[in-house]
Image (cartoon, rainbow, N blue to C red; front, side):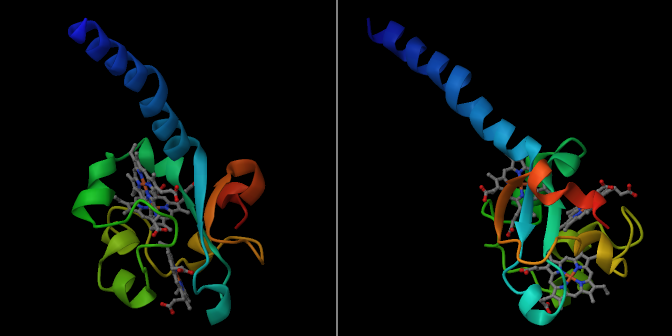
Length: 127
Ligand code: HEC
Ligand code: HEC
Ligand code: HEC
């Protein structure tokens, strides 16, 4: 009995909880606007799904110390130029460089920090 209930719990976790988290991470954009508009640039649209199919979660959320919460990491341009967070890859080597302001600051005005479906943000294609 004990063993069976343990299996049920495992099945519940596998069938229910885990895919919910993965789907969330995979199909949404994270919009980051804690300071952008206040500082005169467009909100950032981070296409989570695009990155997630190319890198393991741990590359960003462990190695690069990026928090699992929209707008909670405390990203600044100074840190990006210093090679932290997005700047670890967007350095003209692994990916296009930090000089391409509009590729990251691509959100329409008023977009709040949070997780949005691609249809809401228009994705990063709104360059
Ligand atoms: C290329 C880097 C990168 C990869 C790879 C990545 N993430 Fe993220 N993730 C981010 C960034 C950036 C944020 C937003 C952090 C911020 O705004 O401070 C984020 C936010 C999140 C959030 C919070 C969204 C919310 O609800 O507010 C979750 C959950 C998350 N990631 C899970 C995952 C999982 C699970 C994977 C792997 C399947 C993954 N991430 C892979 C960069 C990445
Ligand atoms: C682990 C490496 C890595 C990190 C960290 C990372 N990126 Fe990227 N990013 C990439 C790569 C690789 C590409 C593809 C570059 C190319 O096509 O030349 C990319 C592409 C993009 C694109 C374009 C997507 C498209 O549809 O063409 C945007 C926008 C972007 N990144 C924003 C960000 C932002 C904002 C952050 C930080 C919150 C970030 N990235 C962090 C590696 C990374
Ligand atoms: C690889 C993605 C990326 C690129 C390229 C990029 N930024 Fe940012 N930038 C961010 C992120 C993420 C934040 C944090 C957004 C927030 O919290 O509102 C940010 C924040 C800012 C801020 C407000 C905070 C601060 O540090 O002053 C300004 C201003 C800014 N960026 C200007 C620029 C300019 C100008 C360029 C081009 C020279 C640029 N950014 C290129 C991702 C990027």
